[in-house]
Image (cartoon, rainbow, N blue to C red; front, side, top):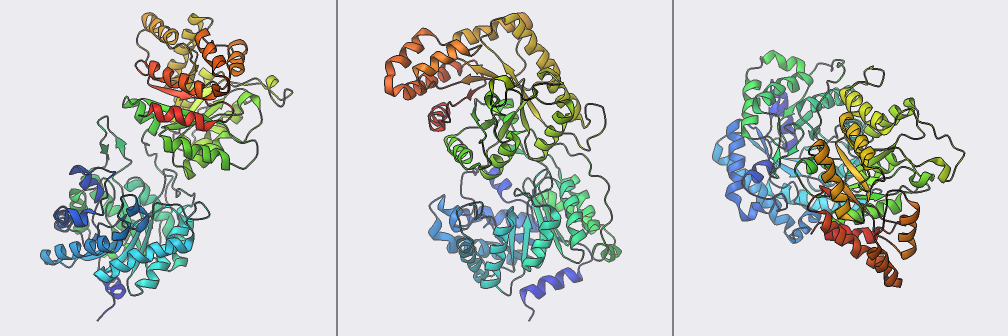
Length: 624
């Protein structure tokens, strides 16, 4: 009797076209009213009929392999729901459910034990040690194997260290089962940890997996590119491809929508076959109709294709076609009318980012929507902010806004820095003039600039986001920056400030961040005056909120920082607070937030002296 591994490879070798996989599980569960904060895996025990029905629909659509509903059924993810003691029970139930549906279908369908990421970071990027991760994977995979899974699928991974431990665990507890390992990729065709498809393929081969894979990520077009790149370094390997139905978009009512329809997916089944995929299906956003369309298109392929997709070397691919990106999370939240909380963080003076990352985690835990990373604030030397943005997004998982001053950059450097920022994952950019070098660490440093803020906004929105540089030459693919501008709600010359704001909006500004406000009524009147003069403001405004730290701090801002006025009552409160002045500053800021909330689209918190724990109190109150 053949082993499960031999059975899978016999199936692949006897097939004249790719094996068809199933589609999404979570997407359909969400459509049935199951919230994303629920434990999908526990439904194997609490609502087995629903899970069985989804399996049945995929088999009826033509799937030859179905995945168990066990993607998050490991001890770390289940612990989030208080179910860490039910790892074995949930995984066994997942296999048994799928097996019963297969038997009832009277079709030859394989059951794949689904294993997702642990949901925690492994060393050296986190605190979980490799041996701890391997033990968690062993626990889950052993239960899947004992329940009768035909193969193990380790999917939607982003960390090759984690994949290595999962594969090793599978080999230890289920040596006879074939193992698929599949990673997910960002919009830039690398994993979240920056590994390109070629490195991923080489690593998976070195781990000894039976089938290499890519899943989730973007839509079919992206995974076709990635498949071709992986095959260049692994031409004889078997490939598992399960793309999302495009990049997800959050609708105003909170639902998640995917753009790629069934017909489009069906067409790409043929392209995947021609590209060398051995097993194809769908991931997030796909439904039984997507799989049915793929089944129909694969059925229409001529048998002679088997000579091509199994043996042919990958062709040199043309330049990748431009793929429209979904808006940034900040853009989506502002577009949906959410009250957004942004917090400013400062880059470190040296190259160690541990403290700023710790601050970012604190603020993210409190509910901040986005972190704004300043660029050499007060003209003091600091780490380049796009590196800090990249580290925060990669290691903390919260979106950032990159401060991008024009001062000190010529036109050549501006464009190179923008490309670098985009390549590192920054999508939100806040354009400002920047502080003059005369007030900072290096007063003799060059202070020239080729573009004023409105000119830089125009360059980004009308050139880079259209795929060309300042001279009109192509940059390959369009960028997708969401651009903010500066606004003073307490200007000495309101008419001039309004004129500058209109110029920035005409250039393409998407949102505005303001200087700190301590008189919300005066700030609101400025916006009302603008609307009377020019009509409703077309961009959302995030109002600056700065927690005062002491009476001396308040006096400095009032007397030495243009555009900031501290009302006498606020000054009196700070003076009377004495040693409790920092806490009083937080209370004042929290009161300002509530006064601002009715007429602004959000707040922009600016912690002073790196007292991020005080900012966290403001964020927490604002998000309640």
